Every structure is written in C-alpha cells, then in structure tokens.
Length: 332
Image 1 (tube, helix red, strand yellow):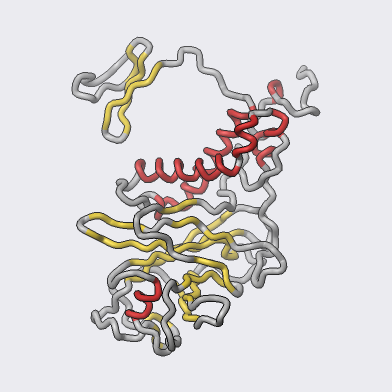
Image 2 (tube, helix red, strand yellow):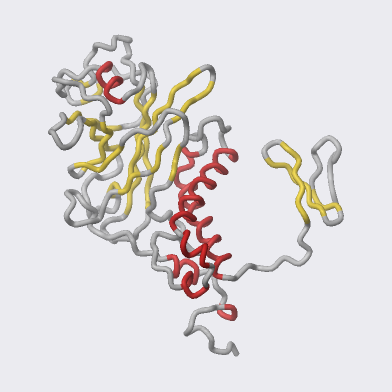
C-alpha cells in the first residue's frame, strides 16, 4: 500500500505493480517484481562479488570518501559515486570474463583481490577514493616509503631551506590549499591480503603567520603549523637524484612503515582540496599499493594477490545450485 502524498513527490510503498521511493530528494518509481528469485548464475554472482568488494572498501574509508567527490553532497551521493567508479574499475578488469559470459571461464577465473560473502575486511585494491577538477597528485612508493612527488623542481632547495612557497610551487598547488595524507595498513605478519586499518592527516599549505617565505620544516617537523592542521603525519624532503624527482616522504602515526608487522602500511595516497567560489574542488586519486615484489626495496613480506574471483563466487553458491564439478552429490 502506498503512503504519503504521491502528487507532491513524497509517495512511498507499493501501488499495484509500481513501487515508489525517494532517492536523492526525488520521488522514483520502479516496476514491482512479484516473483523475485535469488540470482545464482556465475555472471550474476560476479556482479555481487564486485559490489561486495567495493562496499567493503567504502565502509573502511568512508570518513574521507563520504565527501571526496567534487560537486556531490556528503553521504549517499558520494557513496554512490564511489561505488560507480570502483565497479567500473572491476568491470574493466574483468572485461574478458563479462563479455564472454562463459560460466566455466568465470568459475575458473584466477584474478585476485575479490571479497567472499563472509569477508569483513576490504581486499587490497587500488580503489578510486576521490574525483575532481584539480588533476592528480603524484604518489609513489619510493625507497621503502610512500612519497608525494614534486611536479616542478625547486632548484637548490634542501630540507633546511625549503619554504612554504617552494612546497606550493613544487606541488603545482596554491597558497592555502589542503593536502590530506591517507595511509592504510595490512597484517603483513600473517599475510591476510586485506586492509585492516586506516589513518589520515591534513596539512594546510600556509604557515600560521601567513609568511610564505618561512621554512616548511624546523627541527624535522612542520614549521609554523596552520591551526587547521590535524593528525600526526611525519614528512621529510628528499632532493631529486637524477632518477627520482624531489619529493616529500610521509607516514602517519599508528601505521608502521616496516614490513612484516600486524599494521604495516600497505597503501597510501594524497588528496588536494581547494575552496573556489563556494565549491570544494578535489584532486582525482586512487590508492597506491605497496608492492610485494621481492626485488623492490621495502616490499611487503606476503603476497596479497591471493583471494581469487573463483573462490569469491563459490562462497555465494548454494550446494544444490553449485556449478562446481565436485559439488554435485545428492543432499539427504
């Protein structure tokens, strides 16, 4: 039975074969399915796995991702955009399997980092976590640490002489911009292949006294920190060496930079934010994963490419409807 005023756009509930509800402040209708069924085809279950994998990441990161998409309101609109962009990432990754639609191919897919039905922690993936018009900040894993790269070299600058203005110029940003550092951890002592913690901190690129010629560091910490800075982020300036641009290495208190720890840093990124004409602009960022390749300095101890799509799909399949070869015995 429908409730509230249909004509004013506040209808909700069932009216014949129409279901009414509100979404994004607007009354929406859809056809009523009188005979719903639990989809169990491999292609349908693939889509469930994608949504589950994306939802797990949003759940952990939502303190930032619930408002990190430029032009969208905090909460549901940003969550919807997060889901849309990350579902697209996974569908692109699985394009061959989706286009073939072949059940055997899908059920045998060895592509990794997909969440099973009972999974509670997010899989380790380079999730899209913000979108906007400010371009992208260049974040890399360099020499065993995550680093924010300078886009414009600052000739002659050292850790002792680097100024606020040189940081702004080097990053291609503007005075007063906010940069938000994000670090995500994993249990690299056990090798779970999942994220298990999230920390973040912000730095405003303007000193407390407004003097942009002030040095950015003093005694190894941020000099003249802006009153709106928040969180315990450790930064260090590294001069360009001919192969790697000048950059700021960063880490956040509570997440270990060393491998083989229960909270080893596993992914990171930096979001730039700027207020222009009443609109908060954002940089477009995805998480950068710490490699597990043994030839890379500072690699994680455990390989995290372990949770296959095939296993994730199997976790959704009922015994009686399973397509797995060994799961066909009669149930008495």
